[in-house]
Length: 432
Image (cartoon, rainbow, N blue to C red):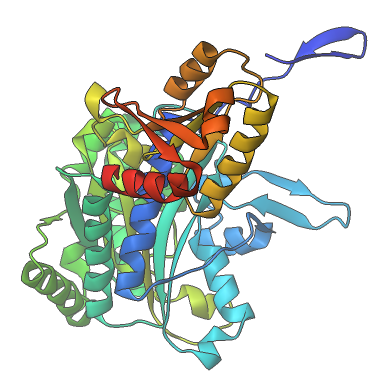
């Protein structure tokens, strides 16, 4: 751990609580997950978007709702030198809606389909799969009213999860209705919960006054027991909302996507309307949500845009990684690569030239410039998981040939310098 002398004492720097360093096997897992996203979502006609990690605080308070836990307890906020109130983004949707309107995509494109990858920030109690800096992958369809868009969005999520290597997940589906329908249900729910106020946790007693719907999202056992017998919002849907919900379910069945209706599932943000969904996984324990999303038909309008619908979801990358299974023999290692081991100054320069040529030809290659003996360089090759080692010494320079060693079976062969690149490209390709 690094130490510096500061204000009269030695100080050790370490990462902040709730953050983590992503390296080695963890980085390989992240790369695999992100590669799956970049492979799957463009097939569904989503294009990548990258928004800033900082936005004006009001963007999130207006989008997420001032009574949400995210706004009240979890946002990282500060004032910059111009006294602008800024927040690190706690989620991706609000910034994408801002970008959609600021870039006039509502006028020039109409329907926009985006996917994103990147860090989010929430000041919550760190625990397994829940960090203060965490990463999400998500998609957003802006300008989409149809239940077909809901089904397509959910299908892209399930295809992505399968491609990333996740199985045994459960899709849960609900419909929160319009804001008006939800208000009617809130009053009914409050009337049901009020006589049982004493059994609610402290947070839920507060939620009961501000927004009774929030109680349905509580994970505490005493609250969950009450919620299990609470009214269903599906009973308060208008025929239009009910038909939307029915058609989404019908389309998912046509796509072969199994799901469970969960009439007491809500999302923790105020902007959701009609369709909401959650994907859970048994490996995540009591708080088993792996991904979640839904429809937010009025958010664009709230920011001064047109009255158009939208639907999307977000996946927690750290939580997704917890759902993957790797045996010792399955651990991710770098793809087939080459290590160059040299003996002598002239061989080192020739090896460095070969290293450059291999990289120009898109072959992963490495050297240990500090190692003096062949034995220590071979140890470095092992640590680098090299598939092949090129050995160069004075004898090899005189003969104009390099020794190529296959680290997987121990075999060796001599190859003329002019053929080394071609031969190694073929060998690496055949081992990929």
